[in-house]
Length: 279
Length: 230
Image (tube, rainbow over all chains, first blue to last red; front, top):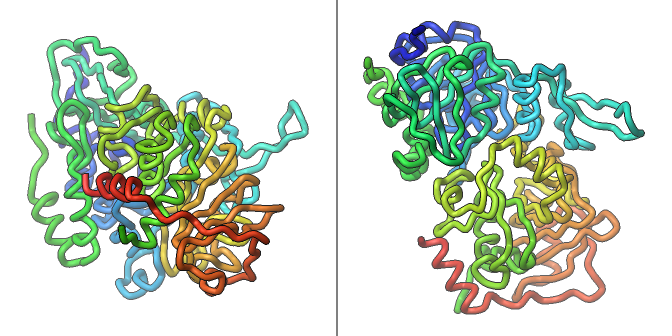
């Protein structure tokens, strides 16, 4: 039986390479902080990070120096505020003051990112959507293009497929062969996995057999490159039926990331000097 | 009961939502107002959060758009592509509830940058679902605090387009889009037309019959405070 189950350290070392485009998805729920931290520890460089809602994990990764570019649709700490570490790499006042390389941005709306992943997963050259009319987004991002409908006089906007080199998602469970089961808010996890060249799924636990569960999504092992066990690997986001979102941490992050020294100290204590589970 | 300008704004926004409507809810003030409406005059309002929860009935206000409570109390939880393709673009959502950092006289919104796009003074969160929500729902409710910094003559970036049927609720009053332009139709108690003009960077159109909002009732205020403290 080909082994899909790997340690987090080996899986990230094998799958994520310098210069890759990497999509860590999960809509508030099931965000693989564990894999993001492992990428920081392994000092990957020049990544293009893709994600509908870059939140605290991308704030940490981008300030941790792994990324050159960000592809996204909403950039913030939901219900709390902005992402201070990322803003320092975007706003010219702090870019100049700190002497950091500006982060390259490629920006869509949520539906645009949804359409991009869908085009990627369905192997289409583009995907149409009724959005963007008369807004500044197609000006800011020339990859958002207008197209005449071949069937009527209407115009439609299209976006190109997103096919990340690596997709990373978190799920509740996998079996020993690497079949993955997730439930609750599903986000765009499945599309990200199916659009990507390689897919890493981190899970709360590996079990002997996946118990069928109504409403759950199963991604079969053959559609995934590697599975790594990472208990509490989505924290401070959450894993439905396992643990709740740590809203207090998200609120606390605002002050931590606002201050560069505090940010560095936090990262050293919680990311750089801690290790991924080796099981 | 004494109330703050923000409480008046939230209550006025909640009153805009009609019972039985299907509403696409953003996080923060829109979510607070929508849940206030659900707890009072609109028990059958259907709240859709873009994380994929349809018919959420949260027991406490969610901090994020995907808190577990939203999924647990929902009629259905679907994947994000389904929300945008079938439910929003399919035309099944009545009302979109949007916030923004800037608004212009046509109800166009900016939630992307302050300053220029390439060299922003302040980088804001960006579009999220706003461009498609503004275009694909039948009616848009916008909540925004009114000042000459937010009610601007020229947006720094046009993130989403004003809607034909759009109402804007501020901490000073209520504006409705009439013939493509926002018109002040009501002021909250104690606010003068001069104050509203002062807080607007363009010459504000005012309705012939300017109404005064009812102050928040004790019921509205106590439920709002209960929601916020839970």
